[in-house]
Every structure is written in C-alpha cells, then in structure tokens.
Length: 280
Ligand SMILES: O=C(O)CCC(=O)C(=O)O
Image (cartoon, rainbow, N blue to C red; front, side, top):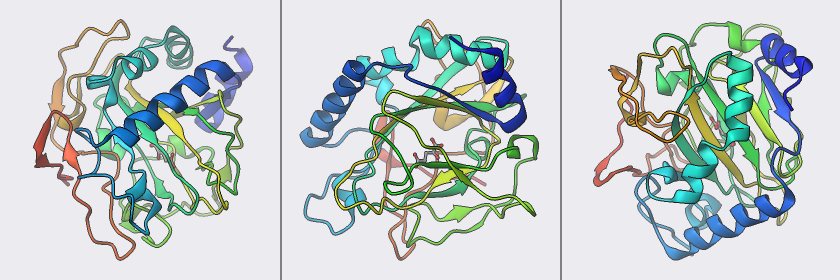
C-alpha cells in the first residue's frame, strides 16, 4: 500500500522504495526468464551480440532494452497494477509507459555514471519516472543504485565526460555544491520509484560472484504531450498505444562505450539494422 509517508518522501527527496512489492516467487521467475533469454541470443535493442569470451562482463551479459515490444512477460510487468497504483499515487495521475530495460550487472561489471533520465526522454511538459525492481539483493558491494536526494528540483544539467573505467556510459553530470550520492540498499522484490530529474546512477559491481540484476520501467507523466522518438509508441497503462508527439532531442538511456571510451554499437529496437544515435 502506498502510504502518505512514501508520497512525502518522494515529494521531498525525489524517490521512495516500495518494499516487497513483488514476491520471492515472482522475482525468481523474472530472473530465470531473463537469464534464459540472454543465454538464447541477441535481441533488437541490445548489443550487437553476446560475447561469452569477452573480458568485459557487460559484453557477456549486455543489458536488454524495450523487451516489452516483443516479450509479453516484460509488457505485463511494465503495466502491472501494483506499479500503476504506485506511480499514479505518487504523480496524482496515471502515467504512460515507454520503456523496459534489464540490467544483468554481473560481478566485475562497470556501473552507469550519474545522470538524469529526462536528459534522454525529453518529456514535455513534465518529466519521466522510473520503477526499478531489484531482482537480487543490492548493496554497495554489488553496485546498488545511487541517488542524490533532492536533485529532482534542479533543472536538466549540461553533461561532462564520465570515467569510462567505472561507467559503461561516457557522460555524467557535475554534482551541485554540497550534494553527494547515497546508496539505495534494496532486497530482491523491492521497487525504487524515482523522478526523472533526480540525479542517479551506479558504481561498479565489486563482488566476487554476485549479480545485481534489475528490471526497469520508464514512464512519463500523464500530462505529457511529447517524448523523444526512441520511446515511441508510448502505451497507456492498459497496454493500448497513445498518440504523442516527438520531442526533437533525446535518445536511448545512455550510450554504451568500452573502458577506453569507444562506442559499442547498439541497435535500435524495432529496426535491427539501424544504430541508435544520441541527438543533442
Ligand atoms: O541500474 C543501474 O545501474 C542504472 C539504471 C539507471 O540509471 C536507470 O534506470 O535510469
């Protein structure tokens, strides 16, 4: 149940955690499902392919993007009534659903440098929201999510170069004076809801052998009229498509680069022959 304290925390800090929103059985089913999909091959929206011989753990387990466009379990999760109740309770109006992502983040994997999701989604008017379901217990050792409380009230920041030995994306944002990231410690089944302006990211998985898998949904406020092209079609929370306009900027949620900062080709969902390009 969404509580007034959760709404207050979300309003003040830009995020809140719904503890135990998904059961241990559900989480185990998602883990098994995505591990089996990953082992079976490559899909529109993820990397050019799985390289099981690579030294980079993220090439052995690349993230998946927009699975809801071809996988019913992902679609049903994205519009699950529990997620909808929380998002609607936090936002005051039912949102649109625009993206799913699965991060495997095996032991040794780099994290994703601090960023604001709205930089990529370019929702107008308003902003985006994330629902981040922990599929494993997450802590600092295995690279839990890090958030900078209160930064949902600041505007979109200009990006600077990230340290690609620590991050698989190559841009980050300078932190406002006196602010620093805090780890969000979660148990498998917890869902972190956060505002799309909130600065967040994650550090490397420094554990010897633990995954830090997460199933992520991105949403946009119900008053939105436009979102970046990459996120079309937006869906209503009953799964039907909504007619929205295209925001001129934006792109996929972070562009994957090697440790040397070289771009890794990722394919645009729906058209495996086209590379995604971040327009700025
Ligand atoms: O899971 C992570 O490490 C980063 C995820 C993220 O930044 C996002 O969902 O926008």
